[in-house]
Length: 197
Image 1 (cartoon, one colour):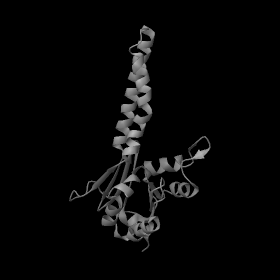
Image 2: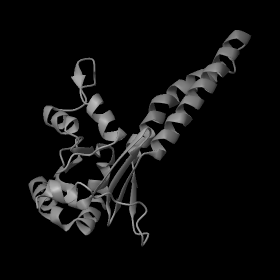
Image 3: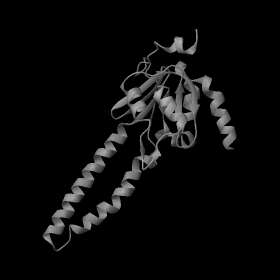
Image 4: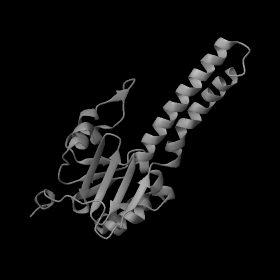
C-alpha cells in the first residue's frame, strides 16, 4: 500500500485523546510589525487632538478611533492564527480556513527562509485547500506571493504553508517538536541544519 492509499482516510482529531499538543502562534515580529507601522500614524493623529481647531480635533479623534479599531481587529485575527502539532498530526488554523493532516501524510518539508511549509503525499481536501489553490497565483504589483513550486503544490492541495511560524525554527522548538511527533522527518531537518552551519 503506498502513502496515498494509506493516508487517504486518515483524519487527525484535535485535541488529541491524551491532550498532548503543542501550539505555535505567528512570530513576534509578524505579530507586532503592524503596530510599528500604525504607531507613527496614531501619534500624528493623537497630536491633532490637542489642536486649537475643532475640525482638526474631530478629524484626529476619528482617525485615532479608526486606526485603533482596525489595528485591534488585525491583532485579534493574527492571534487566532496558530499551528498545532500533536501525535495525531498537523493543524494550521487561519481566519477563514484550516488545513490539517496526519503525520503519515507529511512526506517532506520546505525550509527556505520565508517559504517554510509541510509537503503532503495525499492531497488535502476542504475549504482551506481550495482557498489556497485559488489564491496561489495572487501577488502584489506583479510580484507573486508564492514561487512556481509552491504554486504547483498549492494547486495540487499538497502544501501547508507555515512561513508565518518560521521564526520558531531558529528561535524556538518547532524543529524539535516536529522530530518528536514525526521522526521520519529528522533527516530533512538535520540536512538543512548542516547546510546552515
